[in-house]
Image (tube, rainbow, N blue to C red):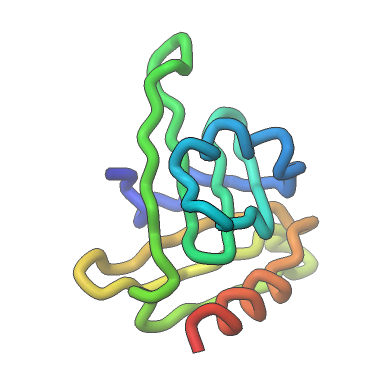
Length: 124
């Protein structure tokens, strides 16, 4: 399992779902759609219409990968922090029953408000 409390694990930039979609396609359910995708240097996070799939690429070759599936149905609360003038990173924090806090950091160019709205539409 990925250590989500360590924000340095994910410093995410928006990316095309086509870029990371093939890596998570075998895990997706029939009819499940990718809504947004973000990528760090090697790791990436995919937001679908049912869950968040976080992928931690490991090893020198990058063939070993840790996939964490975080269903929206288990979210208890969430928080977004927008980028500012000096702090250019945005943050998304999710609290899951049984797991605790999950934290993602995004580059300022990410539309964190859209992510917050999307999560609200799936959770509420």
